[in-house]
Length: 286
Image 1 (cartoon, rainbow, N blue to C red):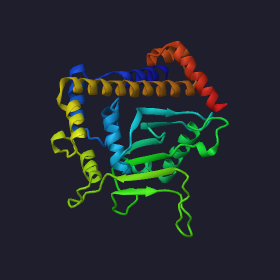
Image 2 (image 1 turned 30 degrees about the vertical axis):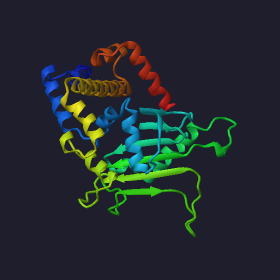
Image 3 (image 1 turned 120 degrees about the vertical axis):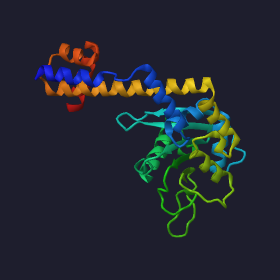
Image 4 (image 1 turned 60 degrees about the vertical axis):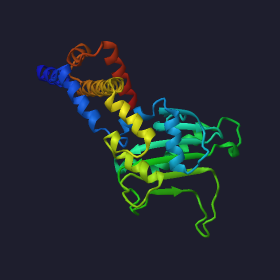
């Protein structure tokens, strides 16, 4: 039994492809990327405040929006014991307003409850101890979805708290927006319709918004940009492989039939890593 487990664990960790084969796969992945793919979107917006500002202006309709800070994969982990989230693109403008831009291809990732949680997490993150509730920043949680998750064939859905009896707005400063990535109306020449069109495009030459086309062309058609994308894909692949390795080790630990040394040999992890995984497993089951 022990030998079979060792062989199974080792087999799952063997790289069957050569570096050249991985590189060819990565090039095909880059070729098929669209801004609607969150891995590609994060690279498009990484350290590109002007592009993020342009997209937010188009979506929110705030023409004078001046973004002062922008970052990708922003972690919100303020509440101990609460579920942490990682924001795809997060920005702050000159008026202190907060903008969370999310790409969601799967419908289940763009539920009203998730949008509500993102909005609440931003509130908690940016209201310090002893500050008045009135000092909460205005916030925009924006989901660009591959499908029409609201089912009304609209380009954009804007939500705010209102009085259910007469429609009077609460004006609490919280905004939730769903942008329908499946919207396709040839007669709609608005900038938002163009943006949605471009988010579905694989090729820069097919895009209508110059700034987005230029950035897409850089990552897909220039040696420097392609190299950056290949490195990003490799890092994601290595991270996924590491997570699979950890899961294999956790499964072996749970079975309780192998020594730490045997698990380390089967997974190519260190004894320190095995000890840390065992401690984490014990904490979860405690």
